[in-house]
Length: 173
Image 1 (cartoon, helix red, strand yellow):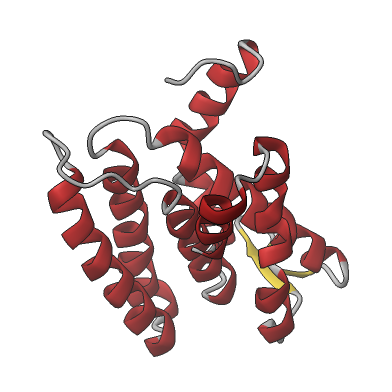
Image 2: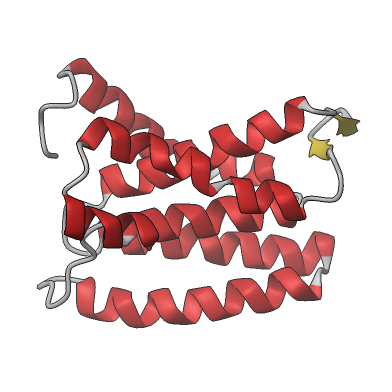
Protein backbone atom coordinates (compact mmCIF):
# COMPACT_ATOMS: atom_id res chain seq x y z
CA UNK A 1 0.00 0.00 0.00
CA UNK A 2 2.89 2.33 0.80
CA UNK A 3 4.48 1.62 -2.59
CA UNK A 4 1.27 2.66 -4.34
CA UNK A 5 1.05 5.84 -2.25
CA UNK A 6 4.65 6.87 -2.94
CA UNK A 7 4.31 5.99 -6.63
CA UNK A 8 1.26 8.24 -6.97
CA UNK A 9 3.19 11.17 -5.51
CA UNK A 10 6.68 10.67 -6.97
CA UNK A 11 6.15 8.42 -10.04
CA UNK A 12 8.81 5.84 -9.17
CA UNK A 13 10.53 4.07 -12.09
CA UNK A 14 9.25 0.55 -12.73
CA UNK A 15 12.61 -1.11 -12.00
CA UNK A 16 12.91 0.56 -8.60
CA UNK A 17 9.24 -0.14 -7.83
CA UNK A 18 9.85 -3.83 -8.50
CA UNK A 19 12.54 -4.09 -5.80
CA UNK A 20 10.80 -2.12 -3.04
CA UNK A 21 8.83 -5.18 -1.77
CA UNK A 22 12.13 -6.79 -0.75
CA UNK A 23 12.66 -3.85 1.59
CA UNK A 24 9.05 -4.18 2.78
CA UNK A 25 9.98 -7.65 4.02
CA UNK A 26 12.17 -6.18 6.79
CA UNK A 27 9.30 -5.85 9.32
CA UNK A 28 8.35 -9.46 8.58
CA UNK A 29 11.93 -10.51 9.25
CA UNK A 30 11.86 -8.57 12.52
CA UNK A 31 8.88 -10.53 13.85
CA UNK A 32 10.06 -13.93 12.62
CA UNK A 33 11.06 -16.00 15.64
CA UNK A 34 12.08 -19.26 13.98
CA UNK A 35 14.33 -19.95 11.03
CA UNK A 36 12.91 -23.44 10.58
CA UNK A 37 10.84 -24.15 7.49
CA UNK A 38 8.53 -27.07 6.81
CA UNK A 39 9.68 -28.76 3.60
CA UNK A 40 7.62 -31.61 2.11
CA UNK A 41 9.31 -35.03 2.25
CA UNK A 42 12.12 -33.62 4.44
CA UNK A 43 10.20 -32.37 7.47
CA UNK A 44 11.28 -29.26 9.32
CA UNK A 45 14.62 -27.84 8.16
CA UNK A 46 16.46 -25.07 10.04
CA UNK A 47 17.86 -22.71 7.40
CA UNK A 48 19.57 -20.26 9.74
CA UNK A 49 20.37 -16.84 8.26
CA UNK A 50 19.49 -18.07 4.76
CA UNK A 51 15.83 -18.09 5.90
CA UNK A 52 15.84 -14.28 6.07
CA UNK A 53 17.06 -14.06 2.48
CA UNK A 54 14.26 -16.45 1.50
CA UNK A 55 11.75 -14.11 3.20
CA UNK A 56 13.01 -11.13 1.18
CA UNK A 57 12.96 -13.11 -2.08
CA UNK A 58 9.51 -14.49 -1.27
CA UNK A 59 8.06 -11.03 -0.61
CA UNK A 60 9.70 -9.65 -3.76
CA UNK A 61 8.36 -12.48 -5.93
CA UNK A 62 4.86 -12.60 -4.43
CA UNK A 63 4.25 -8.85 -4.71
CA UNK A 64 5.53 -8.54 -8.25
CA UNK A 65 3.82 -11.72 -9.46
CA UNK A 66 0.39 -10.66 -8.22
CA UNK A 67 0.88 -7.22 -9.74
CA UNK A 68 1.84 -8.67 -13.16
CA UNK A 69 -1.19 -10.96 -13.51
CA UNK A 70 -3.80 -8.44 -12.47
CA UNK A 71 -4.41 -6.94 -15.88
CA UNK A 72 -7.92 -8.14 -16.65
CA UNK A 73 -11.33 -8.09 -14.96
CA UNK A 74 -11.17 -10.06 -11.73
CA UNK A 75 -8.21 -12.29 -12.62
CA UNK A 76 -5.78 -10.87 -10.06
CA UNK A 77 -8.28 -10.63 -7.24
CA UNK A 78 -9.88 -13.98 -8.14
CA UNK A 79 -6.63 -15.95 -8.18
CA UNK A 80 -5.57 -14.21 -4.98
CA UNK A 81 -8.82 -15.25 -3.34
CA UNK A 82 -8.28 -18.85 -4.42
CA UNK A 83 -4.77 -18.87 -2.97
CA UNK A 84 -5.79 -17.18 0.28
CA UNK A 85 -8.81 -19.48 0.72
CA UNK A 86 -6.67 -22.55 0.10
CA UNK A 87 -4.16 -21.32 2.65
CA UNK A 88 -6.99 -20.80 5.13
CA UNK A 89 -8.30 -24.34 4.64
CA UNK A 90 -4.78 -25.75 4.94
CA UNK A 91 -4.18 -23.75 8.09
CA UNK A 92 -7.44 -24.92 9.64
CA UNK A 93 -6.75 -28.54 8.77
CA UNK A 94 -2.99 -28.86 9.38
CA UNK A 95 -1.59 -25.95 11.40
CA UNK A 96 -4.58 -24.79 13.42
CA UNK A 97 -3.06 -21.35 14.11
CA UNK A 98 -5.72 -18.98 15.40
CA UNK A 99 -3.65 -15.92 14.49
CA UNK A 100 -3.29 -16.97 10.85
CA UNK A 101 -6.98 -17.95 10.71
CA UNK A 102 -8.10 -14.50 11.87
CA UNK A 103 -5.59 -12.80 9.56
CA UNK A 104 -6.68 -14.80 6.51
CA UNK A 105 -10.41 -14.46 7.24
CA UNK A 106 -10.15 -10.68 7.50
CA UNK A 107 -8.09 -10.38 4.33
CA UNK A 108 -10.35 -12.78 2.41
CA UNK A 109 -13.36 -10.71 3.46
CA UNK A 110 -11.73 -7.51 2.22
CA UNK A 111 -10.61 -9.05 -1.08
CA UNK A 112 -14.02 -10.67 -1.58
CA UNK A 113 -15.65 -7.24 -1.41
CA UNK A 114 -13.04 -5.87 -3.81
CA UNK A 115 -13.44 -8.82 -6.18
CA UNK A 116 -17.20 -8.19 -6.38
CA UNK A 117 -16.52 -4.75 -7.85
CA UNK A 118 -13.48 -5.86 -9.84
CA UNK A 119 -15.21 -8.74 -11.65
CA UNK A 120 -16.59 -8.35 -15.16
CA UNK A 121 -17.38 -5.58 -15.95
CA UNK A 122 -14.86 -4.02 -13.58
CA UNK A 123 -16.25 -1.04 -11.71
CA UNK A 124 -13.19 -0.76 -9.48
CA UNK A 125 -9.58 -1.20 -10.57
CA UNK A 126 -6.79 -2.22 -8.21
CA UNK A 127 -4.06 0.07 -9.48
CA UNK A 128 -0.98 -0.92 -7.52
CA UNK A 129 -2.95 -2.50 -4.68
CA UNK A 130 -2.10 -5.92 -6.10
CA UNK A 131 1.21 -5.59 -4.29
CA UNK A 132 -0.87 -5.80 -1.11
CA UNK A 133 -2.32 -9.15 -2.15
CA UNK A 134 1.14 -10.55 -2.82
CA UNK A 135 2.40 -9.22 0.50
CA UNK A 136 -0.57 -10.80 2.27
CA UNK A 137 0.10 -14.18 0.68
CA UNK A 138 3.80 -13.93 1.57
CA UNK A 139 3.08 -12.92 5.18
CA UNK A 140 0.57 -15.72 5.71
CA UNK A 141 2.91 -18.22 4.10
CA UNK A 142 5.89 -17.25 6.22
CA UNK A 143 4.19 -16.67 9.56
CA UNK A 144 1.94 -19.71 9.11
CA UNK A 145 4.83 -21.92 7.94
CA UNK A 146 3.11 -22.58 4.60
CA UNK A 147 5.73 -21.27 2.18
CA UNK A 148 5.80 -24.48 0.14
CA UNK A 149 2.00 -24.33 -0.23
CA UNK A 150 2.19 -20.77 -1.54
CA UNK A 151 4.77 -21.87 -4.11
CA UNK A 152 2.50 -24.66 -5.29
CA UNK A 153 -0.39 -22.22 -5.69
CA UNK A 154 1.46 -19.83 -8.03
CA UNK A 155 1.59 -21.66 -11.42
CA UNK A 156 -0.39 -18.94 -13.26
CA UNK A 157 1.99 -16.35 -11.94
CA UNK A 158 5.01 -18.39 -13.05
CA UNK A 159 3.54 -18.75 -16.54
CA UNK A 160 2.79 -15.02 -16.74
CA UNK A 161 6.36 -14.21 -15.71
CA UNK A 162 7.77 -16.50 -18.41
CA UNK A 163 5.51 -15.01 -21.09
CA UNK A 164 6.41 -11.45 -20.13
CA UNK A 165 10.12 -12.22 -19.81
CA UNK A 166 10.16 -13.58 -23.38
CA UNK A 167 9.10 -10.12 -24.59
CA UNK A 168 11.44 -8.20 -22.30
CA UNK A 169 8.55 -7.16 -20.01
CA UNK A 170 7.28 -4.77 -22.70
CA UNK A 171 3.87 -6.40 -23.27
CA UNK A 172 0.90 -5.60 -21.05
CA UNK A 173 -0.97 -8.94 -20.97
